Amino acid sequence: MSFTSETKLQICNEELSMMQKKAQLCALFQMRASLHMNWQGMYLSFQAEHGFLVKHIFKLVKEVYQVDPRLSVLKKMQLKKNNIYRIQIYDKANEILEDLHIYTDEGFNSEPPKEFIQDEDIARCYLQGIFLAGGSINDPKTSNYHMDITCNDPDLAEGIKKVMEIFYLPAKTIKRRNNMVVYLKVGDKIADFLRLCNATDALFEFERNRIERDLYNQIQRLDNIELANEVKAQKAALKQLEYIATIEANLEHLKVSDKILKVMELRKEFPYANNNELCEFMYKKYGEEISKSGMKHRLTKIKELALECMEEENA
Image (tube, rainbow, N blue to C red):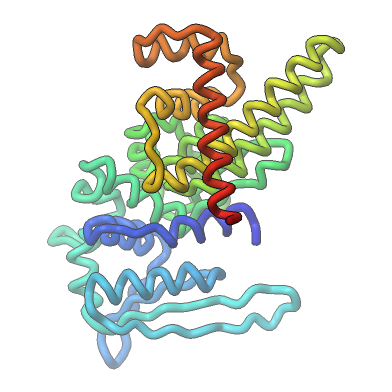
C-alpha cells in the first residue's frame, strides 16, 4: 500500500462526532460525487479505487442519514489495473445534498460551506474529506516533498486553498490539464497537514524519512568531527520521536507532568534542535528558563516512560 493510501486509511479510522461526519461527507461529495436521474428518481454516486474509502462513506451515510446505500465493484479489463468500487445512494439524495449545504435555494454550491469551516475542528474534518477524495502525498523517501489535491472546479480549489490558510498552510493552485490542483511543496507544511488530519503514524513515518534524508544530505557537507556529533544528535532526535509516539499512544494510562509534555511538544516541533536550542525554544514558547542539564534530565525521563510502556506491552 502506498504512503498516500496508508494515510487515507488512518484518517478513515478516526472516531468522529455527527458534525464532523457531515463535514467529511460534504467534502467527499463536493469532490467526487455525481448526481444522476433514472426512472426511480434522483440518486448519488461515488466511486474510487480504494475499497476502504467507499466502505467509509457507506458507514458515514448510514450513520448520519439512516439509509442503505448500494455497493458494487467494477472490474477493469486492463491487466494490472485496480478495481473500481462504487457506492450509490437512492434514498434521500436531495435531502442529503441540502443538509450538507451542497444544494441550496441558489443552486449547487461549489465552495466550502461556511457551516463547515467556521469552527476549526469541523474545518479540519472538511479538509480530511477533501484529502480522502482527491489528495496524494509522494513517498517521503523520494527526492522531493509534494502534496497535492486535485479537483475539477476552480471555485472549489480556491475555497480549499483558503481553508488551508486558516491553518497557516500556504497552499498554491495550478491548472493541470482539465483540473485544478491545490499543492504544498514544503516538508514542514506537509507534516503540519498530516498532523492536522490526525494521521499520526503517517506523520511519524514522514518525519522519520525526512530526518534520515536530511541527515544524509548534511553528512556530505560536514567534517569528520562535526559529522560524528551530528549523527549522534540526529539519531538521538529520531529515537526521542519514537519514544514520544509510544508515550502519546499510552497517555491515558500514564501520569505525565506538564514539564515533560512541553518538552515532547518542542521535540516534535523542532526535531533537529540540540539541547541548547531546545532550552532557548522553551523560554521563547513557554517563558520557562531551563539549563542544558535540566533539558537532558527531562529527555531522559521521556525515554524512561517510553521504555516502561514497551515493557508492559511485552509482558
